[in-house]
Image (cartoon, rainbow, N blue to C red; front, side, top):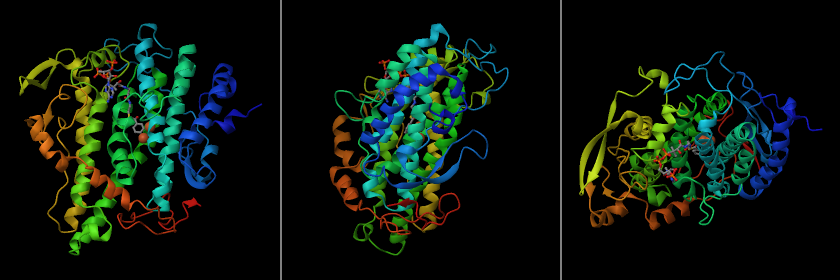
Amino acid sequence: MIDYSQKIPNNVDLSHDKRLQRALEKWQPDYIDWWRSMGPTDFNEKEIYLRTAVSVERNGWAQFDYVQMPDYRWGIFLQPAEAGRTIGFGDHQGQEAWQEVPGEYRNWLRRLIVTQADTEPASVEQQRLLGHTAPSLYDLRNLFQVNVEEGRHLWAMVYLLHSYFGRDGREEASELLERRSGNADHPRILGTFNEPCEDWLSFFCFAMFTDRDGKFQLLSLAESGFDPLARTCRFMLTEEAHHLFVGQTGVGRVIKRTAELLAEGKDPREEGAIPFEVIQKYIHFWCSSSNDLYGAEVSSNGANFFRSGIKGRAYEDRYEDHQALNDSYEITQVEGGRLTTEEVPLRNAMNEVLRDEFVKDNLKGVEYWNRIVEKAGLEYRFRLPHRRFNRSIGVYANHHFDLDGNIIDASAFEAKKHEWLPTDEDREYVKSLMQKVTEQGKYAAWISPPPKGVNGQPIDFEYVRL
Ligand code: BYC
Ligand code: FE
Ligand code: FE
């Protein structure tokens, strides 16, 4: 007999839940196969200094030790239940939170959970080759930490599918291991998760912007009236913070390296570093792609999710009115090639409300980057592209905009595109710098070392035993 509490750390009483055990017994080997074939290549036998969550207590969710990734103890954790929790928004506000899936919302809930779940393995697939070109052992370890935690996020969602959605939940759980990032015939569900992520500047931008979509989607699902989903997402957010840290400080360290060279009067290209303009183009690309992840500006799906109490707003308790029935939201539309504004009922603008929070949070990261540039005594400033720029989803999708959100025609966009988005040459240049550095305490020439190591360890610690 398998000792579940050892193999699968959990706070869902797995050792007494026969149904869940049976479902997981079938799914777990497929997951490991998927990890071995689609997860990080070639590092499965290496010892990595990783953090594992073994309980939800303060001292249990961050245990550090050397582990081989396939032996990582992917656990199932929910934030402890809050006695008497009620639904915080929408038409069911004030009613007792649901411990089982309400029949009338079953399909919507399943779709939201599957969409969330699908992003987790997708990101691992996107990042699978990066281990070969890591700029240091510290960064290599951070990559793998992110990867195993995205794996755990998949477990978290599969737990919900297995426990609450019966047979079709089990089928969805299998399909999560079958879709493939970037595969034309069987792609991942959301756009950004099919984009190649083949160099470390892309990885850092992904962790900055795309994982930040994760943060806000999780925050809004953490408000859900379906209590197991809310509690699952709350615990996932504790891990998400590290992913955002990797993204923001990763880009920051690339900027710092270039800034120091410029301050010494050197040409970054000659020193094997990445020019600011190229970094800025990567920011434009990943930020605009991640803007798409909030869906359409005007969305009846969004309204339904809110009305039914299954997906709220981030930080719902900061709002006074949890009904959102009396207010409207001004959406900028495109009509006859010009920008116009339209008032829509607030409930139909929930995707846009969440995107607002995302943009605000991104701006703090950009300010952090600009402090690095400023400290080096340089004039250059990084920026976000306007949310209308380079969109593939929503009301701006079939139009062209400049970085400030002004509408322009297709030829004007074509003429400027190479200044705004990474060109083939930019990508080739960045890729040419991606040579692995595996000596303890050494860092590639295009990135500055971190100010401190992981879990109080020094920056020249043996984070990966190669
Ligand atoms: N790409 O009403 P609309 C993370 C579809 S990231 C392709 O605008 P709705 C992580 C949409 O499905 C967080 N298709 O959208 C990060 C709909 O299709 P149908 C992920 C898209 O329904 C890094 C149609 O367009 N979490 O955790 O409000 C590493 C128009 O519908 C896209 C979630 O997404 C797109 N970008 O959907 C690892 C939370 N956007 O029905 C992990 C769960 C929209 O017409 N998902 N479509 O066929 C949701 O809350 C919602 O499904 C969405 C918006 C936010 C995606
Ligand atoms: Fe995740
Ligand atoms: Fe993440």
